Length: 293
Image (cartoon, rainbow, N blue to C red; front, side, top):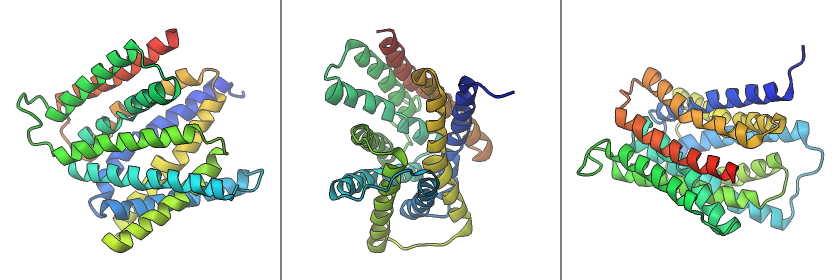
């Protein structure tokens, strides 16, 4: 019996959520053996190869190599994967995974603000309420229940995790206005991003080949940056209601805490859970109100 499009959509979406839920754990494992820049080089190169294979087997047209197209991809690649993941990996290097992962999820808030400012040009009251709810979650998560501030949590790590969300918001806005084929854009973006990270490493670090770290980086390249994007697009294309399907993604940070606890043996703080609930609640509040309007 053939599957309906709705079932196919939920299968692809569920598989994507499951894989994305493991990457925070993979980040921490990889960072035991590699510096953030080295991790980005190996993972970005893996994604680049994956997108090239997708293009070879699925591209119906030649890749647009005009100067405008290349400039767009150069700018996008500078932001993602180069700046976004370099900053994100450094945040994970400084923070427990249970804190870095939910803080990074504030990219949804940044995208909502950017949408209101640059696209809709109308920041509604419910956007403000959702923002406040999520921001309370950031405070709880960062302070871990300490009234006098962030306690023992690394302040620079918190700033970097939030900053990564800002760069993802910029990338999302650029990508929204770019009408080229998705995999063509991603291939060129990762091509330039990989070149940037290679140049960065030449001047700031060195390439280290530790097999455990490289394997973890390849895993991240496939299941954070590459294959999961392909699966997510499939889920949205089969869905009769892409926005409803998209809400499944909010299960990711909660499931991620399970992997962090079991594999990394991080004792999950009640404040990490409460903070995450507030962050996701603020996002869902804004999404639900927007759908009703």
